[in-house]
Image (cartoon, rainbow over all chains, first blue to last red; front, side, top):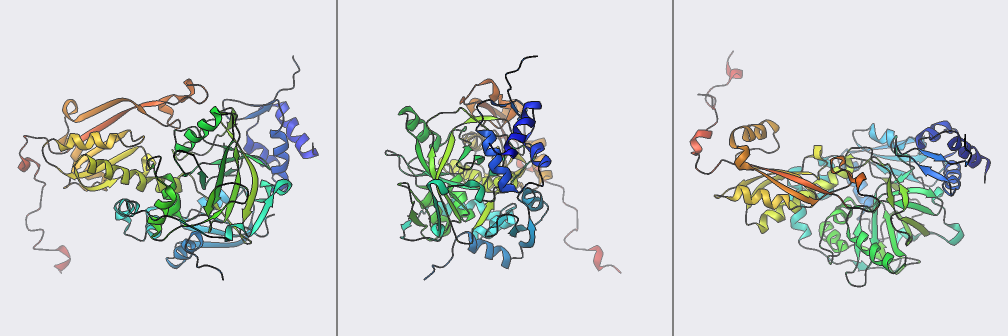
Length: 63
Length: 452
């Protein structure tokens, strides 16, 4: 997984995030590079969609 | 020798000549295309796309009735009548051996959707979207089908596809799914708006939308064989995606997307489109269909023409018809008719049978249905609720209408809706002179401007 994809995953592990929030946060990354990293994130088995359309990644850790 | 352009590029020229096109030469990021396109009162071609040196992007081509009329080559108020007349004279497509849409070919490991300037369109979208598609599929029994289905970028080789609503391609996919087989499909991007109109027309399953497109263009559509599929695509398209819908059913998240209902939609569960080959022109123009306006204006003539046909089948003489853009050119129909006794109700019933139209008003032909005040007057004085309102329960609906509560249906479920029709024609038995409108005495004889 690329470093950018790892960063995106960490964002989604920390809290549910709308796609546009990721786009804004990484606005200085070239678009094709961002898309490729997002493609890697989409490949994660534990990627979840929430009712409001946000994305999150389940870590498996319990409080 | 290069063939004469009759498609997408010719339409851009037509818009240019009519003063309806702006060309932006500054470098624009894919994240800003949608906002900048929405900021223009004209159609826009972005000539310089950051990180995509050979690409241009066109948008807002038919986001009002005037520009759609340029595509149709008719008066803006005659679009539905023109559409209906031309679509009744289909012209079969012809096959050619080489095509501009296959000047560049990416196959196998070369397939990479990130090499296409797929834009970020709306605030709550689930990803970047390809919004203006012309999707082709085939079925052994029913033949070729074309429709418009949005694609959400998932990875360099996969997109989501919105296949929730009932459609011929959904039916083809279900048949393939039942056999646990993928459904091969080809997606063309950057075709003439008339081709998009043909694709969005709810034609009977055995009708070839590509012949309809020929009828609307007035010349046969040129097709070329796909590079990896047994399908044919418009030769003059800008971009082609060849691939298959995976036999997984409605299980992959897709959306939200800025829907043509003017609502930011919901997460849906849909199939996945795997891209196996990308072909395009050497200097391609990506078409970003501007939501909701282009979709709504493309929907309106299709809905209106379906209404005209329904009225004809009901033997009611239509004078004018309108699918208001406020109802997205899709959910409402307003028609004026030359009425014989009882035909107000016949007309309402006929128009309520059209697709997912859920609200209908029928007036006499003295009412200008494009004037809301005139329409309100007819409803105020020609309608008795207990006699002139017709409710039809449990009819077919679209998921994106929140009032049908489709979230209660589960994955792949299909919603229903109740429909309302209002007969705002002069009631039978009421003398017509009771509707005589005020006319000022002498208004044709004297003018204030003539007085000094």
